[in-house]
Image 1 (cartoon, rainbow, N blue to C red):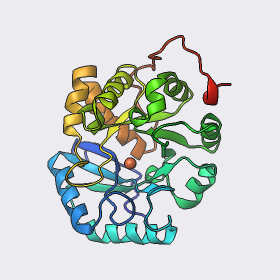
Image 2 (image 1 turned 180 degrees about the horizontal axis):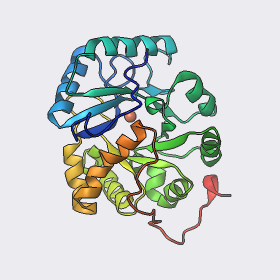
Image 3 (image 1 turned 135 degrees about the vertical axis):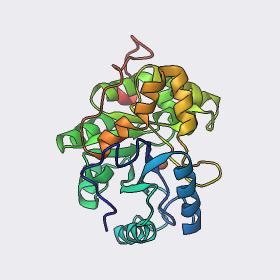
Amino acid sequence: MDIKVKTYFSRNSAGGSLIDLHTHLLPDWDDGAESWEETDRMVEIAASDGIGAVCLTPHIFRFSRHQDSQETLEERFGQFYERYKDENRVMFFRGAEVFIHPDLVREVGDRTLSINQSEYVFVEFPSDQIPAGTRDLFYRMMLAGYTPIISHPERNDLLGRQPEILFDLVSRGCLAQLTAGSLTGGFGSEVKKRAEIFLKHHLVHLMASDAHDSKNRRPVLSHGVEAAARIVGQETAEALARDVPEAILNNRLVPELGRPVCPSRGRKLFGLFGG
Ligand SMILES: [Fe+2]
């Protein structure tokens, strides 16, 4: 079952609030919420933080407790809809976070894995590398009409060491999502430093919580927006967690917040990613 696929979503309908596009609130599916009670707590936290819209992005091809069964996934979304259909503080949308996969283009189309049935798709990399062929895969996605959004590039060690790879992908039309907790130090000082560098160089386009629970990785964006505001100013910081996600949910072109700049200007691409 589709949960609330909205074609028309305006700031008015979400009360001008923040939009959290990447969360693991769907329970008993991946390493996110473990129970409906935990999901209830996460919804409360999101609402208290001024988040008016949440996209559910369960892991696909990674961490699934149910062998990625589409039947179970549909059942879970259906249960979610039933449980929260009268929730009027937070609107919910359907999406996914798809681990990079050779058949990604076909799988996204067959299994409704884009965000709110838009052209935008969250793609996750392993934490320590970028698989060979990523650039070609993204090109094939774009030919099929999809725009990849790289999940939390600041948490990838290779992109940290070689930001020119992220610059290359972003310059070719990919988007990238910063995790709010990365900017506030929740993943350590190295990840925080990368997050700040990517933000300063316009290599990330939106901010989300990537919430997994109600204790450590919570659905909170306000602190991340405050931290971003100190680097890029209040207006851009709010756009990362509101205007850009809103455009994505509506399947519109995202507003440009700044032209990407390569943090390691002049360095050439080598190795796996060369060519
Ligand atoms: Fe995630």
